[in-house]
Structure formats: structure tokens, C-alpha cells
Image 1 (cartoon, one colour):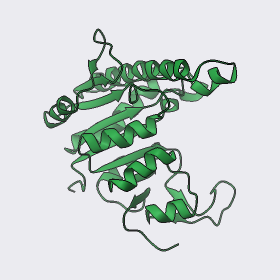
Image 2: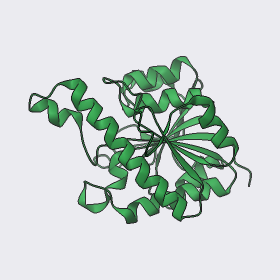
Image 3: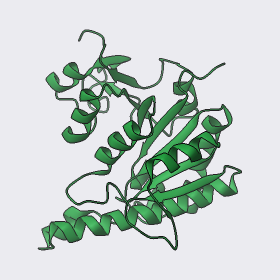
Image 4: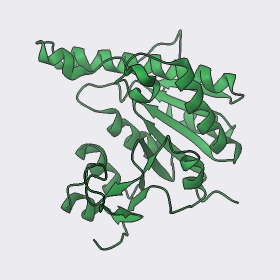
Length: 243
């Protein structure tokens, strides 16, 4: 089968690296993530990854104790670089050439994020792990994913979650909840579906960047999705189904 996307931006939460303990970095979980990315990489798809930091630090925790928002957010940006280094190491050990680029200058451990250099890495067959958020406080890694996807000219943002797409209701509470294959941006807003934070979602909407929500941990869901299998995930774009 031929992939329906040439280049993707995968948005991973920091918690994805945490494993069963819920915090820290689990090398086994990093390897599991790397192998799922490798499946897509081996199919010929170019992969950029934006990763969060929730397994190591949440700015809201600091602010609850009186910490300045800017300081708390900068700590989170640094934590994403730690996660990025762990993921790159797991990718390299899995046989995938990878680079870490960061919006926060750390030249001793990672390249600075430069758009054209990131694109060049992708063209040369390297996975690019983009860390450091946007390098500025008050923006989430969802927003970083949306912006970086547009900068590197990705075909779609794939948001890795634990749920197989967007449902009409919480599938854990309502067994009759319906999964949508395809929605448009207005339908998501009208139904108040929580896909990404509003800044990130609006950025995608205004620039017609498709978003896919899928269960990253479900067998070969990511690989199936990039092959166009509509049995996994929900695609959100300028055209959608009626609710």
C-alpha cells in the first residue's frame, strides 16, 4: 500500500514517555514509541515530532504555589528537550536516523530549530524531534505542533491520544457514543469537542491544516492511519460529515 501522506507532524504528550508510573521517562516506553514511528518511517513517510513535558513538569503545578508563569513555562520547555533527547536515542537505537531541534538554545545537546534545516533533515530521511515548544511562554505544545506543521509543510497534524478518535460522547461513560470518521472545524467548535487548545485549533483552521486524532497505542493505528484506513481515528479538515 502507498501512504496517503508524504510528511506528517506527530504530536506526542510527555505522558507518553512515562510508562505505568505516570511520571519520569521510561526507556521501554520510549522504545515502544520509537518502533511505532519506525513503522511509518519505513513506509517512506517523512516524520516530524513535537513532544510535550507533562511527565516531567507542568507549569500549572508551579503556578499553584505562586511561581511566575514565565518561569514555570520556561521550565516546561526545558523538560521537552529532555523528552526529545530520550526519544531521539530510542529512535537511533531502533535504526532510525533522527535529530533533535529546539526553540530554546542548547547548542551542546541539540540543534537550534531552523525551519529550512528541519525540512532538509526530513528530505534526507531523518526524523526531526522538535522540542522547546515555541521558545516563548504562554503557548502550549499543541500550538507549537500546529505552527511547526505549517512551517515544515506537513500534510497533517496527528495528535496521539489514548482514544480512537473524536466521539459524540465520552465512550467510557456512554456505550452508545459514536466515533466520527471525519469532521470539519466548525462542527468541532459547535459541539465543543476537545481536540487541541483553542489557539492551536484556530491556527489549523485558519491555515487549513488537517488534524487527525487517534489512539497511538492501539496496535498499528498510526501506520493504518497514514495508509488512509478510516477505521482508525478522526480527521478534522475544511470538509466533514454532518452530525
